[in-house]
Image (cartoon, rainbow, N blue to C red; front, side, top):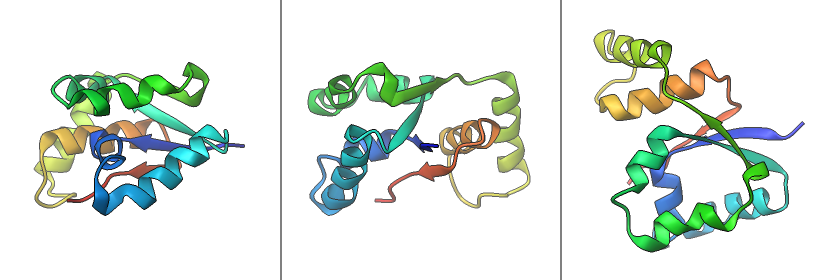
Length: 116
């Protein structure tokens, strides 16, 4: 069974960042080799809208069978708000909590996020 890895914008952008190049290139190589599947969300699509062109184009290089798409639901939105209200995740943004909630609800194997 392929490992399901939820990615956010930092992973896609990290592909072009010198500091994260080795880690992200390795992750994308595993994707190319069909060892893993990326879980991507409508939040990622929205966040990539303002990204540089090379970052926006990266995921276009891969076929749809490399991805599983998930949508932000009411359940995920409520869970994200609960994370903030209960201070479960410490100091972070609601956007980050939405990604975490989506990963949780969709029972991904790994939540991948790069910290800058």
